[in-house]
Image 1: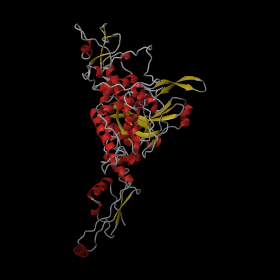
Image 2: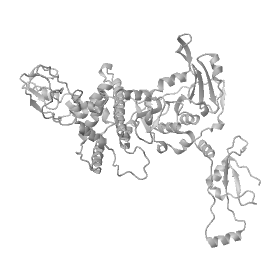
Image 3: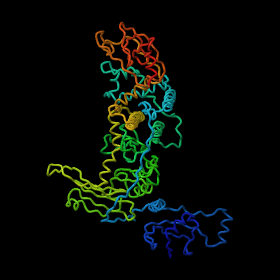
Image 4: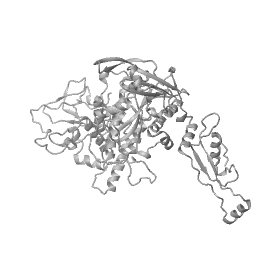
Length: 617
């Protein structure tokens, strides 16, 4: 049969109109085969690599066709057309103005000059006052979230027909506060916090041990009996928690230099989407893809759950999971002229093209098989030229450029805005000479090393005071990770604002004291004073102290507790000697103290330190 070659544009038009309406070109056979392939040159030559079989049911006799319609009253339907995966990829490339892998061409011995770019500058808010650490933390753990936790925790206990005293929002805030302190003061076992010889009063006195375990067992964020039948989210039980945290992250102004990398939530229990990532500090656990700035602030994340992850299915099929994660996270970047860095797990040619079209200037390490054989020298040839040798190649369209640099080993960098550029020297250790030597380094290598560590910095800050618990429940592990994540992100917000206001470095809280401030605020701010435990303390308890031992000094409460205006009542102590007034400018002694703040404040005719302390900022 003589076949009529079709051009690519004609073929796409026929597919859109429906192949069932295409008649046989020869007119002699009932079935016709149309070869589909991509147009590789300007002449319109068609290859035979791709085929799409179409059976066009066209009756040869009009009379017979009429009788068939009268008898059966049905119209023959064409068979379902088949489009190959390669054809789908070519259509996707053309619709998104991307270059197919087979059409990628490289130019060698070309020096690329980085153009001058007006980089994005984050807006500087008009900061007047520095809010308290508790304010920043409550942007992630909102009151609505605590209310949701309260309702669903009580509901789950009722559904399980358990003997459980209904919890309250205040109690769950104390519950979160205890986890923060457990990260600051880690013990190898949870019960050590309540043991007589090892107990920590700030934790043990806040809640009984059995009640703490009860809350951990019944803690829920959703109604487990109302899961939608169409829901495929593997993490639906903790989705409201992470949606609340992510909502705050989406409100933060972006930095100029961002990075995307994997983050692991350590967990080795039973979970069908648990991942293993080599060379990570915690290789086993739940994998998330995070978008962070160079400061470590996280601006967006995706919890990976296999095929049900919120990726574009076409992008996963064509580019893989790594590039699809960058496609998804880059939707957070609405600003132009922003720098984005990622490693070779994510990078490929079409991804860099797509980002360049959106004015996102990206760079990262590359795997050479994803860039269609760039004409680089071999490692042996570059080794003969010496350490610090570099080469660059540029694509024909000028949108993607590759740089190969040889140090101890070769490394390939892919970018859409810079290559070797302005080289500088860096110190490297020479094993033979046993000394540091100066080695030339391309500009793309330097910028990648400086700006790629945002996610790693976030992981490091979380690991310093991570809430370490042993549990088989993945929901509990994700809950404690969310607390650590909110603490670190809110601390980075607090520190950035304090630096903008010009505070001295010694006046800015470090992460440890920031977490302690949050813990103190959660248990005392806008709440009545906690009652002391009833009964006489045990003889071997640290609470039982001899009369000759030195009394613990009174510590001033944080401003969130001092100025909340609730439950601050004057009471008389039972001491034989008056105590010093804790107001800074007062030197008098008094027997009056605040029931909530637990500090002595005088009340006299000339001055009322009690009222001044609770109202003056």
